[in-house]
Length: 41
Image 1 (cartoon, helix red, strand yellow):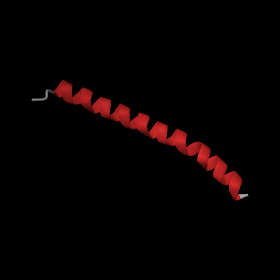
Image 2 (cartoon, rainbow, N blue to C red):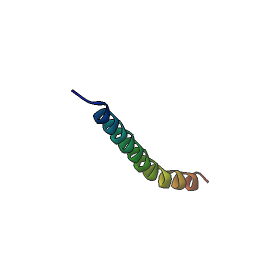
Image 3 (cartoon, one colour):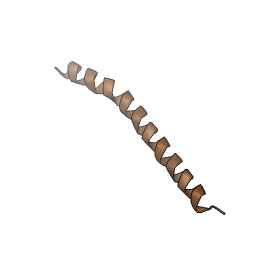
Image 4 (cartoon, helix red, strand yellow):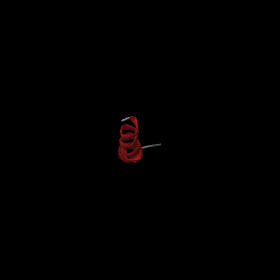
């Protein structure tokens, strides 16, 4: 059975991991967007 504190820490962990995941995706997409714009010109 999960207590309130356990749920809180699990929620914080999920939010933190999700934020890191989006940072990684953003870092991967930024160079491709720049090179795509250069190739289009």
